[in-house]
Image 1 (cartoon, rainbow, N blue to C red):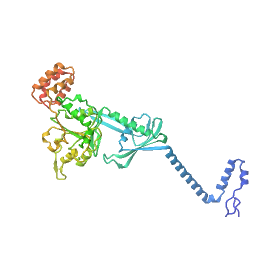
Image 2 (image 1 turned 180 degrees about the vertical axis):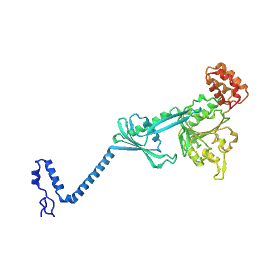
Image 3 (image 1 turned 30 degrees about the vertical axis):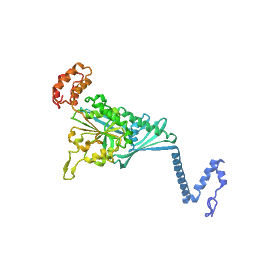
Image 4 (image 1 turned 90 degrees about the vertical axis):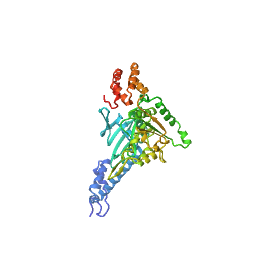
Length: 450
């Protein structure tokens, strides 16, 4: 018995060419349609599933080919750059992108800057930065796809925040723009800190900026007794200019300063002004911190940000607040020997400037005071007649006729007057030297509240 196609049941399928010509209009499309009808609709192999298997295999191969071709085109035409959150440029890029005008973002994150001023007022600033998701920017005529991803499993051990990455994708021919983009992001971050002093504090094993960069304090704004300010400034500058001299003689290239004197005499203010004069930042270390260990102290002091002054305030109070509990025994932060080794031990840092302040130098251990740990000591005392006059003229440039009388009356009180007291009096009587003169008697009380 013959099949409908004219072949035996066990023979291969045949095609009726005459029927194809007759059914078609003579065109190639008509013949193709007829051939398809004979092969698919009238063929028992397709009816039994063999043709469908062949057709599926063909589609699978075509899909695999498309995927490989798209991958090849991606590798040849596109390029990626990944910025992990642990890299310094990560925050630079987010800040730059938040201010970039040519961008399309549908996912935003808010960063709140909260500042509480000394008078109790609060300033709040909101910044909208690109959040997790996809973003599109146009940079120097090139389009870039930005993908910010947040890992749900990996976290930054220093602050507990989820680990993040930002991936930039653009055409291969525009790959060199990545370097320009990162350079612009860095310049924007540097410009925001230009003319300002950054205050760093320790956060886990690293230094992090504390609050917003502060405007540089001008050195003339700090009034110290005659000669003190210039002597310290000249000593620091001489140290910074003689690095080779230290290295040639095998001397550790570091210098320590101790400023001591009563509270409110301007020790910390002078250090801030000195940092501004040298274009340096300040790293503040709290030696009384309960979680501070000797190893962490050594690590932090050996990884101080470049062009920074290390400030250890109230070193006399760092080792006299030890307490005992039944659970944890004696609790104290860093040990005294740990501080000495960090300042002048085998693993101590090089090329550093350390300033220490204290109100009670008499209680400091002689081991801390020896050269190599403290190389320069300066007494910053209460206001001398010279300082009283200089501060008066600083606040009242046109108050010449009141200055000498104010100095006489302040000296006649026969009490110790801090520069902080004088500043409080002058601030209360802004632009009114006569009122300040009339209130000179209030300087008798160091804790007088205006």
